[in-house]
Image (cartoon, rainbow, N blue to C red; front, top):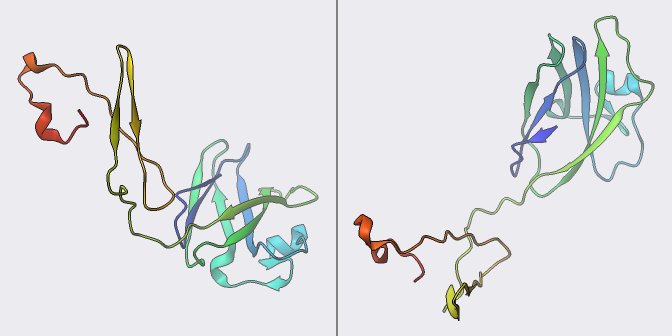
Length: 163
């Protein structure tokens, strides 16, 4: 499983059905040649040697327990192919490596802003209304609808809530 993806890194997480080791190589997405099982186990990608941050092993000391390895030093906004080969303590392994594709995020740290005049609330009907959002870049806008309950002593008008 790939988690915690960033612009130059991600986290590999694995659990095996028995104790063993997971071998992996991280190839460029453009590499058209699948590495062999022995290639993956020796740190070779489809086109040969890879940088040291793009291959390795993850020891799995106990069956069905998730272990992790942080992979860093990658290029932002780039696709990669991860070839996996699990092996048990007797070095039994599958005939072919398994492929998982991953892409690092764009290294962009400026948050989106609302376009001038937004967000807006259009008068609705007795059971609803329309909220409109417009951002200056692709993204997602979230909002929370809080009922107006003045009797609990909270003045929601000071919270910047759309009214």
